[in-house]
Length: 231
Image 1: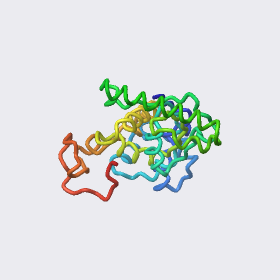
Image 2: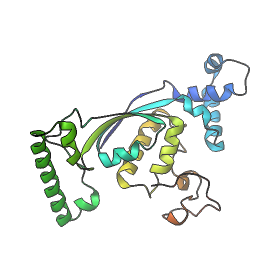
Image 3: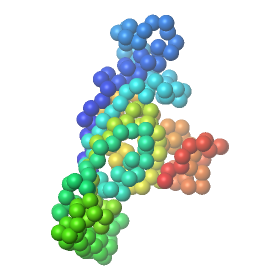
Image 4: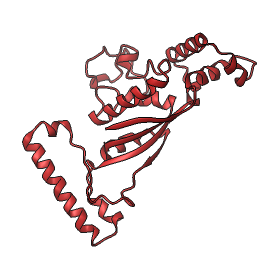
């Protein structure tokens, strides 16, 4: 898996801090931004993150180049709809020698791995045969969920907070959890204070909202908010 932050709003933490302060000031955003000291930025970000006042963090965006994930993983990723995606097309890009992702449980079992690799080889052969008979857009119907894909994804910070809350959870499927960890590491390099409390509720609140689906890492919350459960 390869994940790289390839673009983001310049000076994202100061931008968020200026947007937050504007809500309570008669001074314009440009003037506020110019006058913000580093200590002001730190205090404002801490207040926003801890209080759950998330609307100001929508003003900054982060764009990721993602490679080496399966189509199964990308289908989970695009369910996070407040984001923009551009993905390698199987209609226009031929897959005569497609790479594929092997789940750890299969890689760890010799018999399972052998069966999996035999199946991938059979699928590859069927796809290549079909290319001689039908257009690539139809031959692709035999390609597996394991097929490697590449995608560019752009999120605003508030959407990333939601993504990390769900997908950094231990109950998230292993591949998208690894992707979420890698994306979180990337944004923490450029906005460490903003994303310091980004993650599942067991890390950020010390409680779990997964109810009977909890992994047991943290005690259950006394009530479960109306939030989507990890799927």
